[in-house]
Amino acid sequence: MTRSATDLVTEAKAQVEGLDAEAVEAELRSGDAVLVDLREAEELTAKGRIPGSVHVPRGMLEFRADPTSTYHQEPLDPSKRIILHCASGGRSALGAATLRSMGYTNVAHLDGGFGAWAEAMTQGDATKGPTGAGSRWNAKKDLSFELLRIERVAEIRYDQLQGDRLRHAGQWNRWRPDRKPSSCTYEQLDVAVPAELADLFAHP
Image (cartoon, rainbow, N blue to C red; front, side):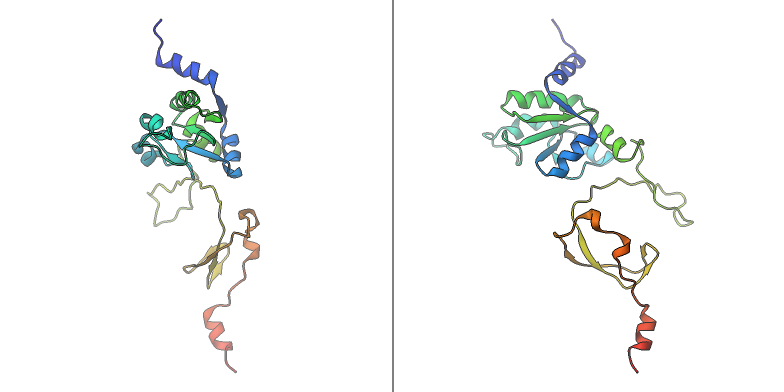
């Protein structure tokens, strides 16, 4: 009996674990999962990628996943939690089924692929990210951007803050592994004294 590509994908999805975008995000935050992007390089260039993902084109998956292959790619390992994703979920379902046959026992795929993740992260708009503030200088520019997953905290120095914006260039100081991103708010910032006032009152 001849089977179509749709038949193969349907069969694969019945065999493997499917996760929604929120579940994938939670696993990535836990730090225990390896997210593998199976799309082609031009797709990543055109659409962006999920932060922290490892790029392995679908055509190379079997070779990259085989620890005995000269093409093996870290961190693919049968003992690790592996989550695959593609553009819409077809390639990742087929890939997950293949990895299971290769001895990967803890493998899943992202239902809906990158499109579902982008929609979830941008609250319903999978084709256009959040939009920055416009002005007369950029009225004709596309100001949409991709949301990033905030994972690390950096300490910076600055000399002028106006509202919630740094008016002059900030200077990186150090990484802060002791701080969680959720603990960083504008309320913690000190208000810098304007340079001209600092000079005026620096001397008696």
